[in-house]
Length: 188
Image 1 (cartoon, helix red, strand yellow):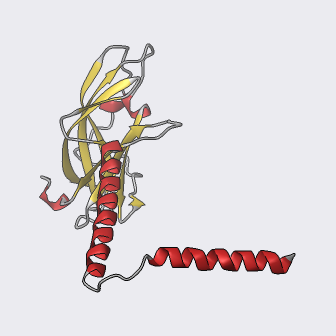
Image 2: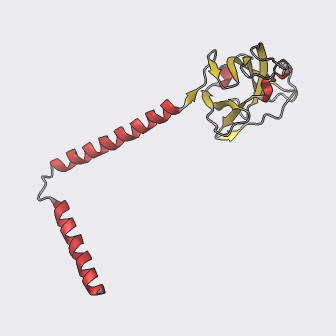
Image 3: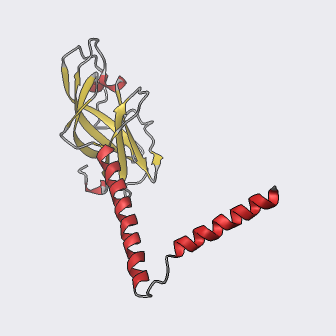
């Protein structure tokens, strides 16, 4: 039985290899076919990249981002320094409560920074020129707080900073993203 199965498999392999040969092919046709296959593969990769970009939510300065219970607009960025001279990114934002209950903005969203794929440190809570208290105030349903301030840590001023804005607590995270390529260009 094993000999019969082996023979049938070998015969199927020979037939499939012969069928794939398809006769003689001119040497001049081979590069054309290879380049067509290469172009098709590149096109598929490009379409797949575009599809990822279409699905990605983009964070833009001055553009309102809508979540189910609040809206937020990041208005500006600037560089500030802590007591040790370490830089951080200060952001100014407006926040509107769309929930039925009062809420404090800082308890509803997070703005994370990443450099070289690693989250930056946000442990600094007191910085000269930054008033975190504005975003800690309770806001009633339908009300808006303007010019609240927050900070994002920076590991290195000479590297791009990737930012992700999302709800603070979310089971289905889909952050809004942006990259600041040149932090040194931001006003201090």
